[in-house]
Each structure stands twice: as C-alpha cells, then as structure tokens.
Length: 460
Ligand code: ATP
Image (cartoon, rainbow, N blue to C red; front, top):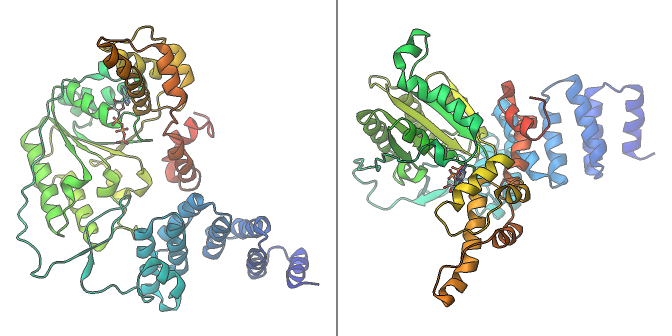
C-alpha cells in the first residue's frame, strides 16, 4: 500500500486525529490531489477553527490551482490574524509575484525572512531581484506609499532630505453640479440626504437627537460608478466648497512632507467650512497599519490622517469627509470608528433604470437623433456610468469623421450607440471577481453584505 493509502486507511479509524489529517492533507497536496487535500484541511478547520496550518494549507491548494485572487484574500486574512506567521508571509510573497505585484511580493518576502531566516529562499529572492537575505542596499529606502499602490524604493540622493516645508495647495471648487445631473442612484441620494445633507442644513435639530453634522462617509464600489460625481454633487446640493484630494497630492517622495501636506489640506478645509473634503483612492492613505504593505513611513501618514479626522485641538465642524475607494478591505478598521469614516455606502453599478437615466443625461446637449434609452439600457447590463460615457464617446467619434467630410453636423443615432455598446466590455466585472472573495471570506460584521446582496448570494 502506498504511503498516502496507509494514511487514508489510518484516518478511516481515527478521522478526527489532527496531526494525522494534516499529514494526509500534505501528502495529497504533494500528490497533486487538490480536492482531497482541501477537504482534509477543511475537516481540520471544522475541528479547530482558525487552525493556522490548515488555513495555510488551503491557501497552498488554491495557489496550486492558480486561484490566486482567492488565495491572496485568504493569505492576507491569515497574516492579519497571525502577524508573526512567517510561512504565511512567504506564501503571500509567492502569490503577489504570481499576480505580478513585485513590490508587494518583496515586502512579504522581507517580512518572512526578518521573522525567521530559515525562510530564506534563494530562487524566489532571485526572481524578486533582491539579495536572498532580504537586505536592500543603504542607498535604497522605502517611500510613503500605502496599500493599493505599488510602493517601492527610491534612491536617496547624497546630501540628505530637502527642507520640507509644505507648499501644498489644493484647488477650491464650488460645484454647480447637483443630484439632478447624476443619473439614477435614487437610494444612494436619499441616504446622502438623510445622513449628510439634512444634518448639515439643520445641525441644531440633529444635535437635539444626539447626532452631529459633518463626520465622514466612505463610498466604495467598482470603478467608474459615480463615487466622485456624487461627492461633487453633494457639495453642490448644499452650496458648499469642494476639495478633491488625490493620493499624489499628499504622498511626497520625501518622508515627512506627506504628514505636513495632509495637515495643510485639513487646515485649508477647516478655514473654508462648510465644505466637502473628498479623498479619492482613500485606501492608499488609510491603509491598514497591520498590513505589511504599509511601510514604516506610510504608517506615520496613516496616524496623522487619523489624528486630523479626530480634529484634536482643531475644529472639524462643518467639514464633511467623503472617501472613495475600490478596495475597502485595505482600509485600517480604525478609520471606521465614530467621528471618522463611520458610515459606509456601497455604490453599485447602475441598474437598468439608472442606466437609462444616465444615457439620457449623456445625450443632453448633443446631436442625438433617435435615442431609445430604455433599449440601450437593456443592452448594457453591468456597464458603469463611465462605461456608458465611453460608449457615447465612441459613437460620437464614429460619426465625427463623416461630419467633417460633409462639413455639417450629422446626428448620432441609436444604431451608432448600439454598435459602440457591442464593442465595449463592461469594466465592473473584474472588480466583482475579487470583491466576491473578500465578501465571502473576510466579511467581518457583515461589512460587505451589500456586495453579497448585489451578487444575489444573500437575501436583503
Ligand atoms: P473611480 O473609482 O474609478 O474613481 P468613480 O466611481 O469615482 O470611479 P466617477 O469618476 O464619478 O466614478 O465617474 C466617471 C464618469 O462616469 C463621470 O465623470 C461621469 O461622466 C460618468 N458617470 C458615472 N456615474 C454616473 C451617473 N450616475 N450619472 C451620470 N454620469 C455618470
């Protein structure tokens, strides 16, 4: 009888023997019998929930099956729960590399080796382009970048760091845009009215019920579905100033200036209240501090961000914080505490009625002859607002050439639009593929129930 069959037989008599089960699962994995390996690891987890070895075993199975995105989600959850589990960090390094994220792979590899030099892996280190011990030269040092960005190393020039005076200046906008220019999203608009606009317009009434004006709301969802647009319109609705802050406005290549820039942004917002302070790609600034992708430098930016949201000696009254992200799972839970981004709103792709509304808005003021918005909306399932705009742009381009030749305006027709829609692939699907994994396997406190409901995996 082969070794694996001996183990199988032994398990028949002693199915709940953990060391035996783990040994059997490992043998199955070595023997490329992935399904049986996974079943055994899951059996271990049913007996001993959260068992590190079994969790890692499942990640290995997924890696072997090339199911990298699910494997990464599980490996990240594992290192979160067991930050000193070096083998899990090493596995994460392999996964990041498989997914083409070399910077994250380097981070994870260095973490594993720093914890235990026994995890040095020469072939892997070579592929990552670093010395096997994980020591980079003194000329290189990490720069302030958070999760969701590539992060990395930059050369420090001889002569040290510059005089770091924050000369950051963001443009103040007074958006004329209102909810009328945002197609669909009726439920979201209503939520924003209740949670944001009414408290800002009638602070004394809300205070009487123990609720405050201002604070923060995190908008998350697939790209191009209107998070930025609705944030701008929110400012327009209450005639407030609007500051749009992007990651690159804040992160400075010189460690230390980022904190100053961040402080400058908040000060400017406080001086211009009432205002909406909108942080795009907020996951990069609010990265999970336990996440090893957040370097030491970015951790201090994150702490500064938390302190500014809290206000401290400053007063954040009348400043509404809106954050948009495609990767809420990378956000440090500390950002969700009261007074910070304590409300979270899922911004899904527009449904059919919303798509029709967006299409009508896009057609406004354009030479469109016979728009059948309902028909086009039916044909564009899964399209984001940005996808619909791309369809319009493509249709316009297709008639522009003939218009130039003819020297007169030739209208865009439904036919042009339908053709352009057929040629466009919706961009929201890829996001849901990885979001589904987070919602299924890292859904603490039902935080991602909205995603599961949207995907029909959970009843509302
Ligand atoms: P990202 O996550 O990539 O930053 P986002 O969710 O912030 O994307 P927006 O930048 O707000 O998306 O939307 C991109 C563009 O798509 C908008 O400028 C607008 O032209 C169009 N669009 C998206 N949603 C809507 C909508 N509901 N109504 C009208 N236009 C929309």
